[in-house]
Length: 329
Image (cartoon, rainbow, N blue to C red):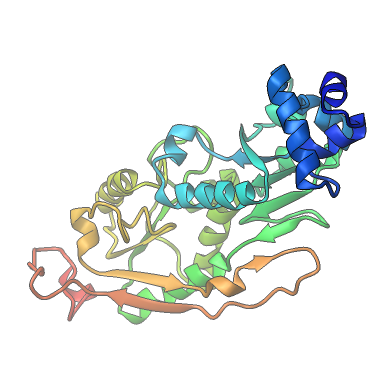
């Protein structure tokens, strides 16, 4: 940098301002510094040196709660990460993907050592504390928590999923269903598609959204006739979980899926069982976030049942009929 300043005939601080953009410089002075740097082959200050001087890295850690190969198959997670990368990039910030710590004794988590200015936790646990939050607290780093309880001063992005799930269950009861099962999101990092008891699922579930959506059955006054945990929130795993649920006795007449992806909703490849009768519950996006200093808004939940088009409908035995949903099971 000193050589660039000498060749350009400016002070060392002027060269520093040229690269930092922190102060006013004339276009002529900036061009003079850039020509001198190009002649000397100088590419600018080392990023780690800039970080040491400023105390900022320009990096935001995004803590992933599941295997990356599963996250990359989840359209919702891809949209969230795309939005984070895009918006933070416009702010001149980069993103570092970090696996969630397990909390096992002796674990060396990247979250403890990675250089970053803040962190976004895509999901947190609701049992025995959250190791990621504990680590970030010790480091004194600001954080945003999605779909879970956040410590004082942290940003929160959440939906009223417990109330939404209870509304869906009541909607199915109003349709006449008496045997209602549920397909849950994965309970942990290395889960498999399997049948669970409600008690075990509530006791062992790691992630807050899974727990809340199971508790909604009690709010609706309904006990699920079967609980199946899906290995991942993708259409293929939802289909496998549905086959497993429908093989149980008593056979459910309706299934509450803990994500639209498990239900085969929207742009996903339609599983044969998902093209019959599908109810969804929507919440206005403008009421879903809470950040430090803001007021929490209550969401107005709206349930609706999607019917297949008449040209597509082919009634089959033990399938759902648009006119008499529960009676044909």
